[in-house]
Length: 236
Image 1: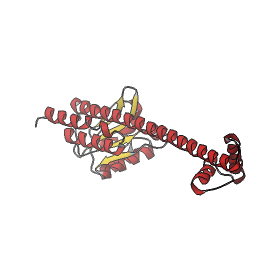
Image 2: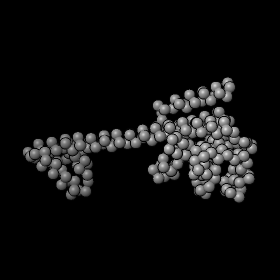
Image 3: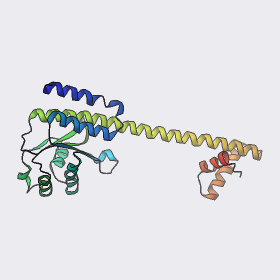
Image 4: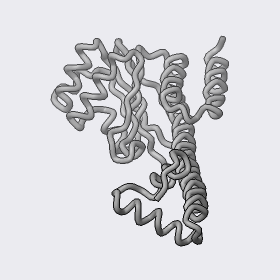
């Protein structure tokens, strides 16, 4: 299979992720495996931006997993090629990390321990959305070509699109769950009002006031009292 045919096959495989876009770990794994299949680095990592974690540090993924040490190092020290790529919004390529010991001492030392020589850090961007950084690693000095960076940026952009979709799906699911919870609460409260109104020979509005007063006295929610009335036979 030629390089072009391989790239087309990988892109087609990656595009089919859309139906499962809510599975974030799967998206990140496929991004790294796609980059490894086409560009043949020794490994790859992904560090997602904090924005995607509601203020919490974004997740890491790595193939092989031992390379996650490099992402942790960058986050703890706030410096390294991935940090620069994310800050500047442009790829950062390193042919020999040993030459960067003065700039990133902790990172360069750790890369040496993992026998990593070259790194390419590519921002994961789609339009105005910045999702994180895809980093590729080589154990031999490697001059990352324009094609390498273009392919990596293309894959990173596709992954960012999946991530945006995943976040949207998750938000919609949360809203749906909240609405369903509110509807269920309303239903059980209405049922409880009917039970108490019948038992007390009073109106539904008066029954609701009895339920609410009982909830306040016992420091529980109206829904909890309503469930007790409907499901457990509680009478007030």
